[in-house]
Amino acid sequence: SKSNIGLIGLAVMGENLALNMERNGWQVSVWNRTTEVVDNFINGRAKGKNIVGCESLEDFTTTLETPRIVMMMVRAGNAVDEVIEKIVPYLSEGDILIDGGNSYFKDTERRVKDMYASGFYFVGAGVSGGEEGALNGPSIMPGGAAEAWPRIKPILQSIAAKANGTPCCEWVGPGGSGHFVKMIHNGIEYGDMQLISEAYFLLKHLQGMGNAEMGDIFARWNEGKLKSYLIEITGHILLHKDVTGAYLLDRILDVAGQKGTGKWSVINALELSIPLELIATAVFERYLSSEKLLRMIAAKTYPRKKPEVVSNKEELIEEIHQTLYAAKLVSYAQGFGVLKKASETYDWKLNLATIARLWRAGCIIRSTFLDDIAYAFEQDSNLENLLLASHFSKEIQEALPYWKKLVATAAHEEISSPAFSSALNYFYSLTTDRLPANLIQAQRDYFGAHTFERVDEEPGKFFHENWTGHGGNTKSGTYNA
Ligand code: NDP
Image 1 (tube, helix red, strand yellow):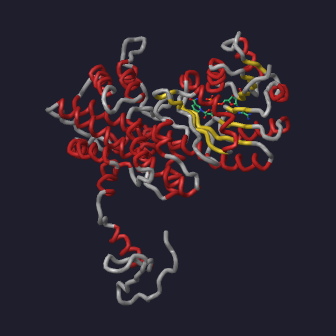
Image 2 (cartoon, rainbow, N blue to C red):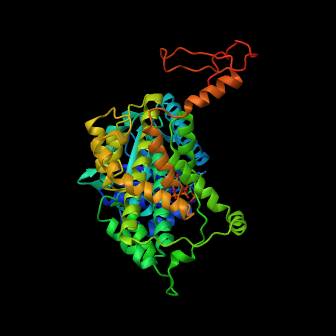
Image 3 (cartoon, rainbow, N blue to C red):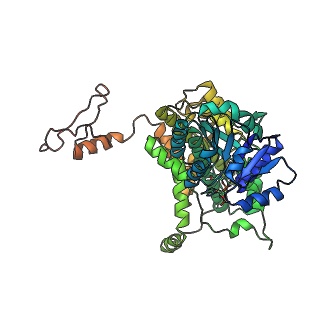
């Protein structure tokens, strides 16, 4: 019989997705550029399973029921275009191509258009959950040619993670929206990881706490409102010992790697003119961590005394707990702010509640907190900022006394906690009805005649002042940078 779906690219993600599909009752054909990889898979993990290995792309396409569904799990970038180019001669009108890799959404936008023009339906689907998710249920964020959705829905929803029975796979929107949402997911992941690292750092240095005790604290936090995959694994990581019996975490070099999706999130936030400071801080901190040699020299130039241990331990733990929650909320408020602006700018009509629900299981940022976010957007789909939702404003008010005290303590004890303080400053700016931007406008007008609006005049009326008495009265046209 013919296969229901074909999968291209048998690296860690493709292999596990193929097994997941087969386990859910679908017959899968597989192809990989390097044929040996196909053989190894068919004779290894796929042995005895309803999986058809193919040596050539031509064979591969003939084993599929029509209209065909082909999912690619290959390296993001040129590889996707190469595979498309190679497979298109064997496809027929109405066939569907899904790109499940971490492609840049602008590439997906282009591919959806080009493939439409050739009579094919292209879908860019973000897949999150790593190896384990791919096998047992990832979170899937498909977007692109909507015509494809009714056909791919049963397969993708069957393999997706389930949150209270609901599959973490829903149609996101047109064009590159699925990959955009995946990109922001990854950006939020960077933010969450930075925040958790700061919590760990403060527990360690303001209390001199050992790994075992910190592991217990994270395990305890994982039972409350911070319950999430990343908090859970942090607890495990803290307790993990290597073969010599030493805590492995203490022996891992403090240089963080990255593959670029955090950076893309920030670049796009800049392009859309929406603050994404917390994620930007997380990305920049990874860069700074990479400058290990420079940091070692600077640490010698500015030697620091050991921080004072904060006397009330339980209170400090609660301060960190509350701060972690509040700063995480700020990060999500910013991330969803970018999604909202992108939706308006690209006319994607994103449903933010649906997106929050897609992330409740299967993916790296899964947490109970996302239920509350989904609920907030369900109550008000035009919610301007998550911090304005009534549930969250109560939470922020509760956290604020702890949050500002902790940021002040960390600053005083000279312990770096950039995301905690960035979040607090965002909160202060957001809740300030008159910022010092009046001075910035005055300076811009002073040196560049960029004009300003006045609080005592109609909005939209622009004024220029002759600040020095000897400048001209010429304004700087429509210059608005
Ligand atoms: P890789 O990103 O390492 O990609 C390797 C696969 O791509 C191999 O099958 C390789 O074939 C194929 N490939 C590379 N270049 C070409 C080409 N020019 N033509 C045809 N095939 C090519 O594999 P992963 O499984 O890690 O990831 C697959 C995709 O999923 C990527 O886009 C990744 O970003 C994304 N992703 C990965 C996650 C992870 O945890 N690893 C999580 C979520 C998404 P060959 O064997 O011939 O070299």
